[in-house]
Length: 241
Length: 94
Image 1 (cartoon, rainbow over the protein chains, first blue to last red):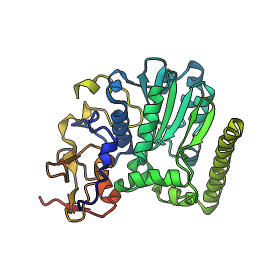
Image 2: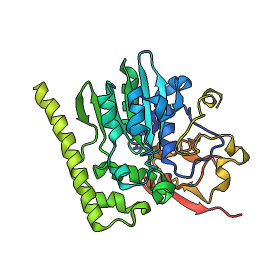
Image 3: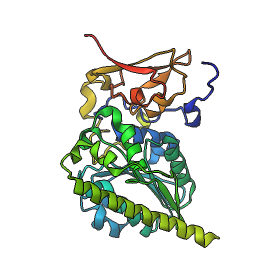
């Protein structure tokens, strides 16, 4: 076994900032996993960070819009930087409806609200999340990161599938990982041959009552959203050349 | 954690950081399953360490990984994510 020298934690800081000795997180909590990885990448900057409610976490005119309407139960972590702030949204889709799982209006809203760096991340891809958090801290302006956290009791799946469900979400293009910096879109994880959305939806028992028509509609909307995203990426590439 | 206790006040979606309510038990107390590492299959890559939600997996002095039984909740993510099937879950005897 000595021929294997790959040691994964070498790519991440070993120090643990999030070690709550006593907490009430469920077994396999995706939110706890995302928070732990986020704290690791932020390092000492988390000492100044604060959990905020959607109303006071966002620019004033956004609070009364989609964020405040209770469409999804999300938690916001606000991290002050030397210039601007980093706002991280931990989204566990507690609204529970199909539109919560497929549409993420907050990301587009953040882009239009003038955040200069916007990214989506998922704890199933820890190094991607780590890089995005570091990039967001490096930029000297407001940044926003949207983290998808699978929630075993909320989505109703077995606790050991947390990481796999996040991977399903990305592979099926329901939650594409991308970043927006200065109006430029770029995909972080390219899904050449996507997984059917039914894999992602059927593995959650909260969607067990969906009919085949609903699944087909979800597939169509995911495909449409992904084509839009690809068109945005391509638009930027064309502009560069 | 003294440095993080100050800002763990508002958590909207679930009671992850609600430490006042959780003072009565340790996270590992309600565990049903416990992970066990097969040292013949383990290549010590550390993926179990990266994916543990509770930071329960640590590296011992021989370079192998173990679960801290006070923190481990037995979710089984490490068992599911191990490339080599080196982690098995067993039920603890009373």
